Length: 296
Image (cartoon, rainbow, N blue to C red; front, side, top):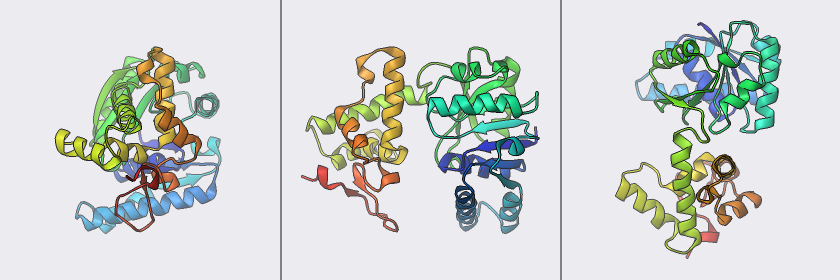
């Protein structure tokens, strides 16, 4: 396995491309938007520079990493030689199913098809192809170059051989793969999202303020980031979507998104990506400022 295609050049996609390229793989980064691809290359270059400043990478390694990445706007062209495709497109089931249906048509017969989905059923994604045994979840964590975990999700039809291949490949990237079965939210988000939702309910019900809730979890539970700040970082729309998937999958009211979260998403207050969530995010500023709506 030498040729990797990554679909989607956003935060997760460029991070996945970065890591594979850094470890010597030939990477095809695919996106329908040429501007987004150029921005992704700039982001990868900037992240490599940070590694150089930390003395974890050399200038030569940076040049080699960037040289290993080729960009494409045409799916068929980008995946023509792929041994593995990692899809990191928008967390939308219709979009993902359409992509996998097309991948099944244009990829070589041996190609393994992986999704970086954080919640959508791998079994369902696999059913959109004629190779469900070669479809698997490869859920990287953000930021990909830094975070060690890869949640490897085995769909109902995923073969043991494919699962072993992806587990081994993750280790070659110096990641720590954990195999899990295909149920709503897998492990990471089945545990994380109810915690975030409960933090939002705690704010909604007036138990404590934004900073107070985050401080309790950081200092009392040794979390590196409070749940409300983490929700902003993930994207409040993404949090709501995953909770909707959990609620639909299990039918348990404990997974229902808090009304406050629903309202914030409807208002377009999505966290870091929109500049406002539970906190306000100003470009160039590292200060964490609580949004006006939640100031006492």
